[in-house]
Image (cartoon, rainbow, N blue to C red; front, side, top):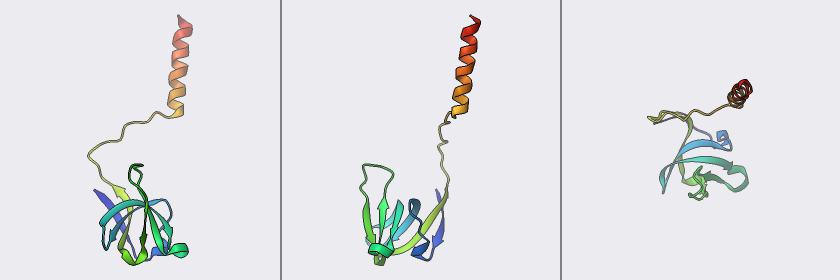
Length: 100
């Protein structure tokens, strides 16, 4: 589930952020967006999945834009070890080895 904020003005679209777009021909699309409205009159839509190609969409084909603000997931993220945590573990191992 995704929580979004409606964007009324395309100039408010910031490069590299995630948006949900409602497009005239493609329907609803979730992508990372790069705003090229001033340069080419398009938005560049890029997927974080490298197997899905990026493509440009004309501003006239964009019906609505929603900036993704949050998401709700049934899967919890895997914990990531911080460098401090790893250093602490290495220090503990070194202390353990020096005691033997």
